[in-house]
Length: 132
Image (cartoon, rainbow, N blue to C red; front, top):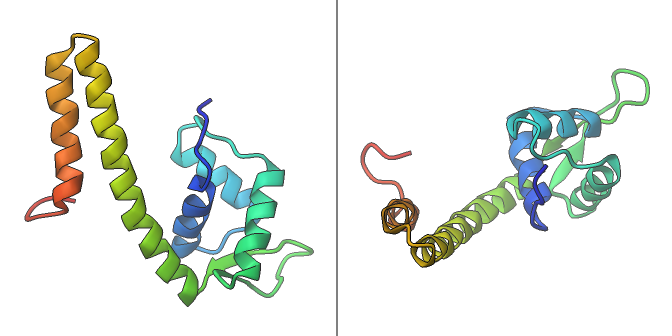
């Protein structure tokens, strides 16, 4: 299991709810699946975060179809927040990669440092032709 920084659950929820409607249980399962079991947020974290997103108007609760299962989907305001978080996340990942390059260099792994810095540079320069 990995330790996930604060705020990543919000990003994951908005991203996944932009792709389909999900219940809290479905969201937790999708996160486990997407991370190959490396991250498994608990129900308390999931439902607390969903409540916050709902109060802020970033997601919408859909009408109930099956018993008491609450399903959610991203709102227009949530899509704007997702775009902002995505851009912020790319900058943070590039910063973390540069830090890993420093660690690699200090460990005497200059070839690894160069590879990691190249990845950071790809993020910082943004997508170009043929880049995702």
